[in-house]
Length: 160
Image (cartoon, rainbow, N blue to C red; front, side):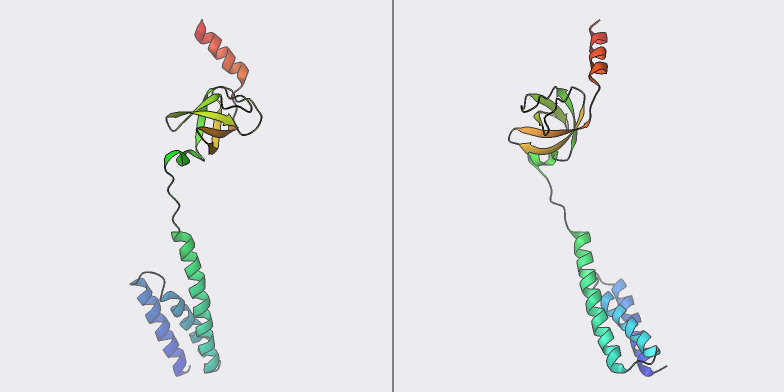
């Protein structure tokens, strides 16, 4: 084993331990690069190749970790106002007819006028998904349709 093996190994250990005490993944790529260079020194590869491996591996790890960290820490935009309803699920409280915003849905404890995104009647009690907001009404799609006969029978039972 050459002197460079021990130098690279010590450098890798110091950088990797130093990474534990710092934030931001700055020392980690260089520690990995030094570890690769130590492996090459152990195998007896020339010093020039050890340095090239250290620089190349460090740069590649730095780019990878930067992209990885950016993806993990990316903030999701906070939805406010009516935009917060998009993606939520609601229940139809008044039948929704095709091509009109005559029906109503209950979403997040609020009643909204609603329009079906497809040309189908959505009956009372159906669960719907809010696809978008269209002015003063919600555009919804059926998630779970309620059987109209069962709904009709239950309303007759309640009436008697």
